[in-house]
Length: 94
Ligand SMILES: [Zn+2]
Image (cartoon, rainbow, N blue to C red):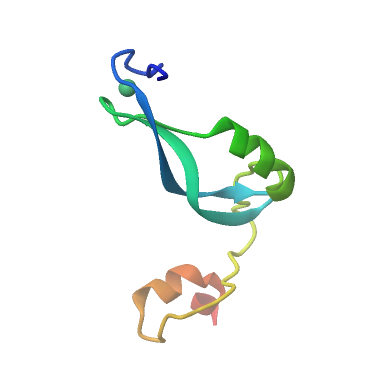
């Protein structure tokens, strides 16, 4: 069993977590991503082998471009939802 490199006391146990990050300017969410979590300090790292297999498919990790308006691919919010203004910057200018 692998010892935690963060606290050097706990051991890493395999678990599945949701993963979300920007890849090639697109926000990507992967459910049930294999990861390793420490049973003492709760430090969590993604499974390196899975990341190495996913990166060629998802593209490199990038930051969102603040100069570009955020696109809403699928909107399930109602017109009275306060989050809608936050998600759709063009709506405020209209
Ligand atoms: Zn730890």
